[in-house]
Image: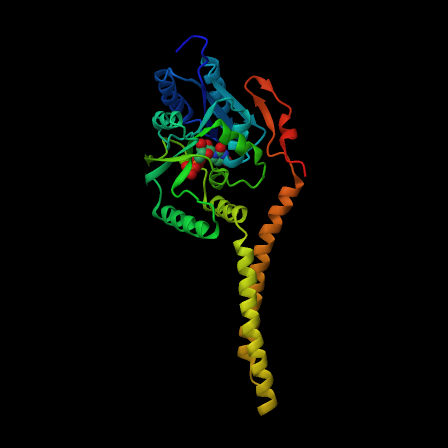
Length: 328
Ligand code: UDP
Ligand code: MG
């Protein structure tokens, strides 16, 4: 390669929240990879998502040693989805690899991703063959969830795939253009399209530290997944509503005829209660469904910036992303 022929830059994007135990280990693995691959320049971009431990300090120390390390410090904890978009906004690479801080995604796979990128793929995603260190219940609920989500939407949702992937610059620009606040990035990767390539890997268990996920967060994310990619639940409410009304109408006619033919019949407490409870239940559920969508519309119309930045590397930042938010 000629000297003035500028090498392409690859950003390794690491969203991190309370990851002090693994950051150094992760850096060592990435450093090895970066040093071995001389064909490209690399940048490690940590997004410190409001960690309450020493994560930020470790990132700063790493940057002192190695200027290829950059970090964005968010003003508080926003969650991984927002952490990723902050990373997209600040990354400089011609390609970006998103990787978890906890070494569940083996960094060595990045070389394979780069190979496919060179072949012209835009989005090379790693699909899990196995999931070590995850409970039976988590695997089962995850499998069920993908099924439900897929049945709700026409977009191909990638099963057993996390955020571990290499994205070409044009995918990153596409994702940056989507400024919705209740982000379901897993679905957005599919939504933007482009040339995709799947590679398989065994997912390790966490190197150290604890998972930040809990069932509440998973349920929230699941509902976000469905409501941001499909209005099928609203359609279902309409269809079920119509069916219940038809049954109700038939029953009404039957009661009227019965009353005319054989007079008023006082007992009927049980059937009345059943009807009231059943209809009341259905109404509440569908009000909830409508509420979910209304809530999303409420958040999006506020058009708030997705996050605020405390600092990018050494510089303190006032938020330059304000302009990037959607103008409605
Ligand atoms: N993470 C984050 N903000 C959060 C929670 C998690 O940036 O509020 C990061 C975390 O540091 C890790 C990645 O997201 O790099 C995945 O988190 P975790 O390992 O806890 O999730 P799991 O692998 O169990 O799904
Ligand atoms: Mg993890």
